[in-house]
Image (cartoon, rainbow, N blue to C red):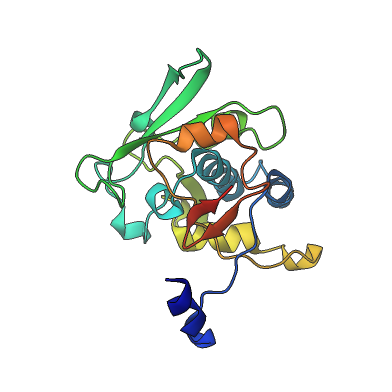
Length: 208
């Protein structure tokens, strides 16, 4: 495998991605206004994806017209539980995942003691945007000629909103983001300061 990799042409190699650290996440959050409907939804999606080690495409929708409550995450998929150490944990059931398209998987996060805390950020979004059980979990309100329109959060909208001011702060543009969901994602949250010392390739953890 190593020999084949050395023979791989440069043009077919995937560019290295900017690693996501807690510090990097906090800089993105600082650019997103919690009093703005879209930004509040993006903040919640960002921190949830990060701490759940979830694929962004499984927490967003491809296009607005693609949303179906039975196929995508909604508030009905969110519940509170306990981890094996007795700590309170938020559990989100993703109806369809890449590794389990039929039954889906549960992803987890626990409260963090800094500005990137996914628990407080998600709760703010839920109180501010108030998505119903029949709407996408990260639904937001958008102004149009017909008034306020409710929209599910698409991946492209998330990327555009989350990177719109990165160049102003001289941060490297990154390819957002495939953390990789699965039943062990809660272990990463508890044991490792995510991505402080990790290497990521093809959207998954390759080394700690």
